[in-house]
Image 1 (tube, rainbow, N blue to C red):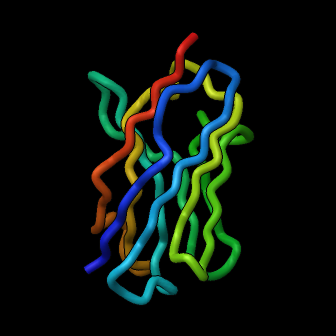
Image 2 (tube, one colour):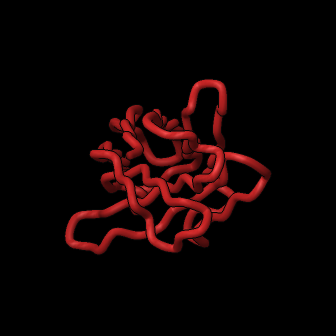
Length: 119
């Protein structure tokens, strides 16, 4: 089992920045991929970014590429999502998730943190 707890959500003005954190615990995470997803009101959940605990691999959705940065602190078992130049379209509940490197599907999810961007 992997437990994930997000934090750092809140309200921010368009053009501003916000950093989300995801604290992970429960298993050795070196063989896991950590991801961020988001779900806006009335829309399906969508992929935002992912990163491997080991190595330098990271991947972003086109909608956030160049604005958001995913990173990890192995010593703290924490993954971050730095959000810059946010727009109202970034308003959503953001979820942290984890999957084994050998899996395509994400198996573990956090409870989500709300991000609201005002115009």
